[in-house]
Image 1 (cartoon, rainbow, N blue to C red):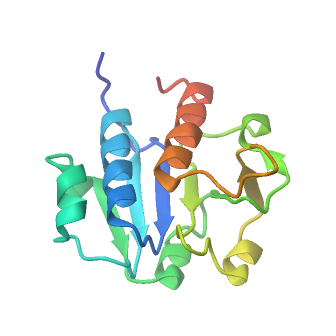
Image 2: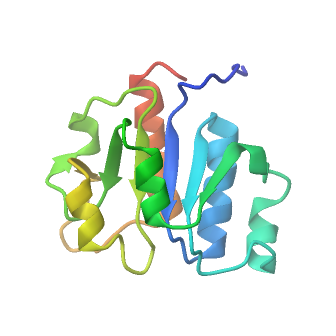
Length: 157
């Protein structure tokens, strides 16, 4: 079953992504589930990268992706909107949080997360609980897990 998208779809934001295959997989996930994607540059790769193109295939529709030249521009554009940061440093589980239809869910770089100054800008910080002996999930997997919960809660799917 397909749905018509409105301006109230959730948004996934990637902070300076550095692995092309993850970003491509996230583009496909967002395209298939009806979420908008926002990419805060600079990226650690070119969109012409063959690894990126191999995974993204024909799912890349730039009208469904907003690019921001830097974090300052991104945060200025979101001044009246709610941003949720997904981070391993959070204490609240994403399943214990009440998502809203127009939320922007921010994910950090695969190699370094987000800088401390970004952490301080965001009130809502969530984590995906996992075994304490493990460091982190793959970024594309984390996006899919969190987006599915957001869509479930907001009755989008």
